[in-house]
Amino acid sequence: MKRIAGEAKQQGLDFVLDREGANHTIYSLDGVIIPIPRHREVNERTTEGIYRECQEKLGKGLVATMSTYTAVVSRDGKFWHIEVPEIDRVTQARTINEVDDMARDLIAIMTGIEPGTIELDVRIQLPDSVRAHLSEVERARDAEAQARSHAATELRAAAAELKNAGLSVRELGAVLGISYQRASQLTSGNSLPAERRRAG
Image (cartoon, rainbow, N blue to C red; front, side, top):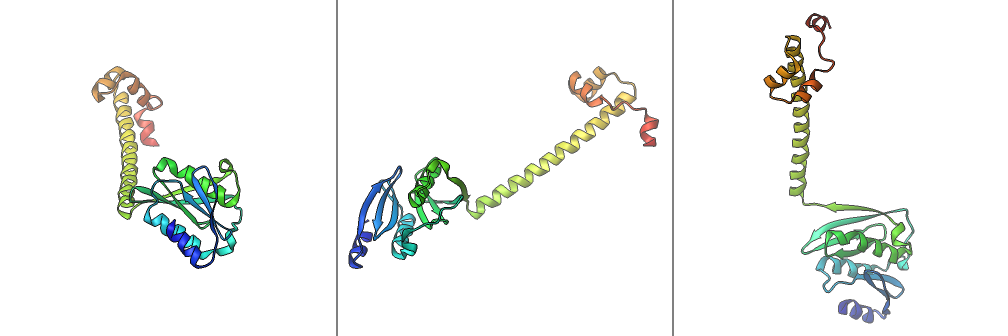
């Protein structure tokens, strides 16, 4: 804050407290709205983003109203860094559960839209190594699903052959190590004569 105030003074710009938002303190830098998260500590990355906003002064603080906004979220030290590209503003959250409220409050400050009416797309950016692990998880789950499907198909085929060999449903369950109810499910509709199955 001292750095921003000092820079503003050197350039002959007004840097004053405008108002308090739900989660941000809002300053005005020569008419440009600068929201700052109301945390005891603002980390370096968020501070740099706020300072960049102050220096650019693009569009004199006017932000076009859009239907959907994006919150690009990434871990930065002990905070979650939040960037909303549609309004070219940044803030931070102390926990992942705070991200939504902080982003909505930031957008509301810059656009005047009610926070509850904002359509927000939160995109959490993960490290490459974590994304690689998650890709492996997806591949493993797909392989597991295919294996389960294949196993179920083979079990039904085995049950059908045993039933056509003359085993009762109860005997079939005992042989395959499954319950009577499961054996009955497996063989329902699978008791076609062997000759007809071969003909098909």
